[in-house]
Length: 176
Image 1 (tube, rainbow, N blue to C red):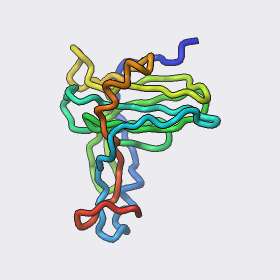
Image 2 (cartoon, helix red, strand yellow):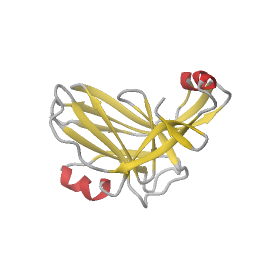
Image 3 (cartoon, rainbow, N blue to C red):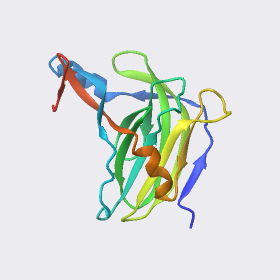
Image 4 (cartoon, one colour):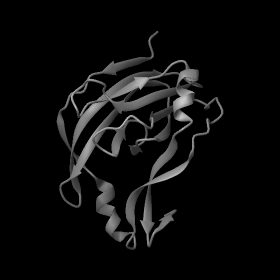
């Protein structure tokens, strides 16, 4: 059974209501920023009743942006070149996509889909997906490529650092 299916970039426009932006004014002057965390350390298997998915953008694979937005799994995540994100999903079909967004106003943004992949997650498995600009593709296209076996992904992802969104005020990260 094939677990992944790559999908070409649709380059379709879509509007997204960004509820987070609407809530930020009440956060005591803190600002939502992309933060960099620790270097990659593979979490132990298995995930009880779920699958672990690492999405990463290896260093040296520069694109027209410094970050892309990832949809799929729980919520929206931001990925930067040289970074990775980790998500836990239940068994079954899942769709991940990379997009670039532009803010229209305090509560709305417009985005363009850059690339996507579908997968059939199996319980107690770990998956690796490389996110990078598409070679010889339209300059705005990205590809989300499943990397198997795991040993092929480890040399790249071990050079990456976790990226995540956090509230920052007065130059300090916040746990709120």
